[in-house]
Length: 357
Image (tube, rainbow, N blue to C red; front, side, top):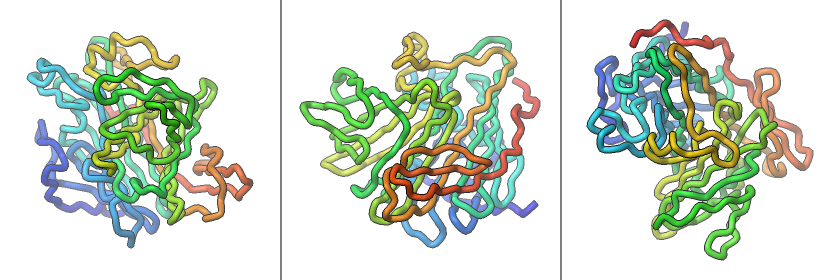
């Protein structure tokens, strides 16, 4: 096994203070090949510093790509007093590094309040700009427990430019969490009517203040995907997942004085950004559940695949993204030859090691 590149970083205000001491909260693992590099922090398993080698400008912002689990969103005063933070305990924990190499990291933690255990496998392909993140969650308690899991990918300045456009196979959505408690707006991708404006969501829509919209996929679609494409540089960043794992794609943006302050794409198991008691009480939205349950002693695996590449400048719109023989296949509407990007090997366990509560 290739020795892991382990270094010490002063993380400043990037990550929350640890609840446990299972790992040094300033330790990080750097995964890198000739096409892509990123850093995995043992605290929260947050990814930062993502960029192709030799490029300037972090593709992720200072919050990075972090895990929201066992919830997505705010907490009650009582939950805060118990030690549960905003977006759940997983982000706050110092995870133990189980195994690492030049291209892989396997991390594990147990959540002291909600009592879930979780293994997170992060792997980068040996040569190309593709990676995967596989979460295996377990409920070692004797009771059924509610949860949600969202991959919070907070994108940096290179993906906040006017030249960046979006493509996805989502079909319907809800514009919600708008300022001043304005009502939700259902829409069909890619256009939404807001305040007498016809907004094309395939470009950076400048809504003043914070806005969240949530998308769903056709019931028969096995895969959900989103691609961000810089029309000036031909760079592409995309994500692919099973809709059975993540039925929702949430997009968060915040602008002030016409400039982006924050922008995130968030595939997940819910679209309700609220305290857990309220989420549990909500009926399905757009025919999709907004809360998940894990029976006593059960496990569940949820996976996300990411990929980066440069596409031909003259290529048309992206029409489909899927898996083909352990490759991500990107297809174009104008007949441009598809792009195949090899993924890391999927030789990962389907269940976590034995854990105790």
